[in-house]
Amino acid sequence: VTIHLPPLRERATDIPALVAHFAKKSCLPEGSAASFSGAAMELLKSYHWPGNVRELENAVLHAVSMCDRIVYPEHLPERIRQSSASGTVDAEPIFSPQADSPDYAEKFVTLAEMESNYAAKVLAHTGGNKQAAARILDIDRKTLGRILDRLEK
Image (cartoon, rainbow, N blue to C red):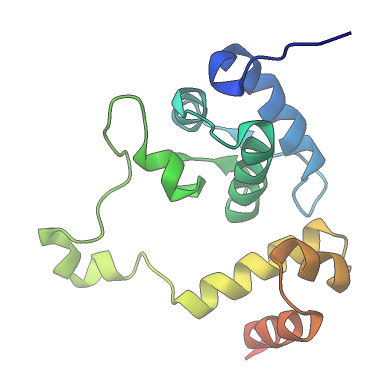
């Protein structure tokens, strides 16, 4: 028996249900699932998904780990934001005239802070299991420990 399952890009109507499933599977630290804004969901539905369902799952895990409770377009991987159906990007460009203003610079954190915060969210997702978190992050457990130590400083 052969079962033909069309690629995800041909099943855009399945994406909201899959996103909800993956968001629930990758719960926030307090145990609740993140919700996706309409704009974020539209970007997910318009993406071409060359990696199919596995790529969608990774994108959802990434977005949930970057958000507080609601996933907005800026929480999605850049490749998804860049390839929206309209060809436009919702995120404000980093290199723009207003980027020189002091207020604009305050929106950003250092790369090390972002890395530490992301590692902490993945660790919370694994229930504090450093080995599992390191596996998800594809780094050594000792490296994870050093990254997390930066949070305490």
